[in-house]
Structures are given as structure tokens and as C-alpha cells.
Length: 75
Image (cartoon, rainbow, N blue to C red):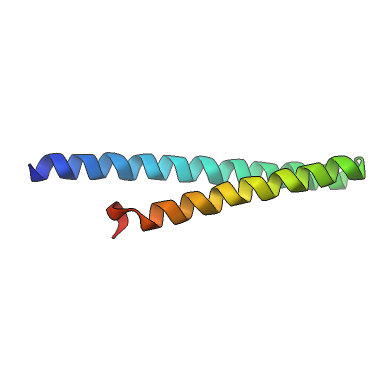
């Protein structure tokens, strides 16, 4: 029974790692998109929309980290 629990925990850790990696990549790519829009002197409204979207992606990333750290697999 304990080996099946270890396999399950290992699989969950891999899944959490993949989700965190994806959330981080999305957040970083969006940061680059905002910086490019600023550098290219894009429309201020467009830049503001990107910044609002970035807040949303940051919240998802923070939630992903919090959820992963609170899960039993990491305790």
C-alpha cells in the first residue's frame, strides 16, 4: 500500500510542478508583451488592458504557488 501512495504523491508532485511552470511561463511572457507594447509606444489603452490582464495572470500564479505549498505532498 505504501508504494502506491508514494507513486501517487510522486505523480501529484510532477503535476504541481508542471502547473507551476506553466503559470510562471504565462506570467513572464505576458510581462514581456507589456514591456514590448511600452517600448513600441502602443496605444495607452492597450497597455492598460495588458496590465489588467497581467494582474489576473499574477493572481493565478500566486494561487498556484499557495495551493501547491498548502497541499499535503509538500508537508
